[in-house]
Image 1 (spheres, rainbow, N blue to C red):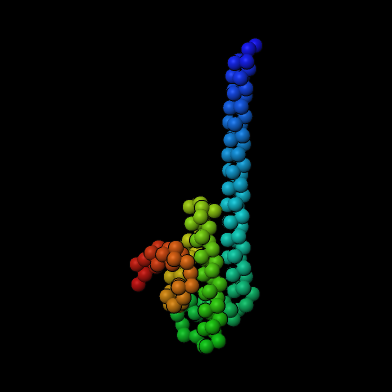
Image 2: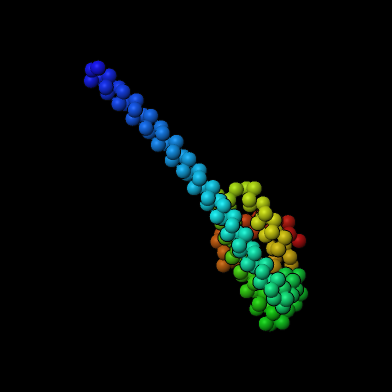
Length: 154
């Protein structure tokens, strides 16, 4: 065998190695993306559960949330509690939206948190809170809330 043939065989072996490496890396990236999506979904579930557990474990907190979100006038103490609940709730919403915006979760997984955001955010007291506090959130989240969730809100 001459040197040209040996060089050609070496190039073929190198090309096969590169293709194999690229295939392996693609598989690793796919697995990493799947793991990140699972982690994001679990975190969203944990956040929702934590918020709901607080309401389930504390009837006064649940009452404040129910009345405040309905737009019922609250005492000064209850109003402060409601504002803090909304702050916590909207931090969760913003985190969930961020996960969707950076493609950590797909459109199918986004449906559930988006529906929950819509259901909570469209309550009169929550809308009033949002109008007073939206400057605390990122422009992309504010745009989502104002153009998607509150679009056509009466």
